Length: 192
Image (cartoon, rainbow, N blue to C red):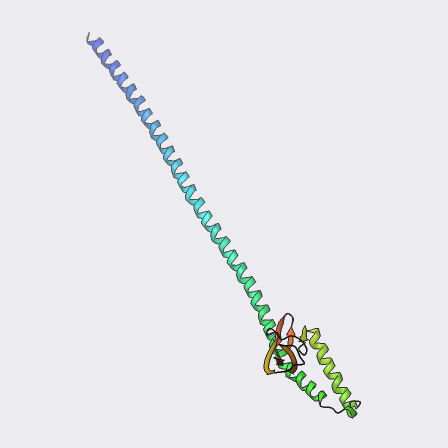
């Protein structure tokens, strides 16, 4: 009997060991499963963080690129504007020379108009006007035209029954357009 008792105890011990082994195996599997879940959660979390970081960097890149593109366009516009301002300033300095040629030619008596010196001055004046025209500078028509504050600067008013009201009757200084902008306003006398 003692042997039977020993056998039963051994069987009980074996059964307990087997149960413990199975329990340990199940625990290990559960732990592995939990570890995999945690790892996949960590991986998903890391992936989400990386995706967010990539989106942030892409957004930064797009904004920086747009800002640079705007800067480039603004620089080109400013450069073109400076060039146009430079042209305008040079042309404004040339206009008094044209005025002086016109005054000089207007004072020449009729009998001297065929003189070679006068002819040379007329050719130089014509050359100046052709060059200005090629640059896009055109004189503003004033005398006989209705007064327009966009093109004319009225410095004198005169009562004249022969002329319609608000008509330019005399021009003291010729005005010029440069492209579609006024380079210099015509200085005029207007009939009331």
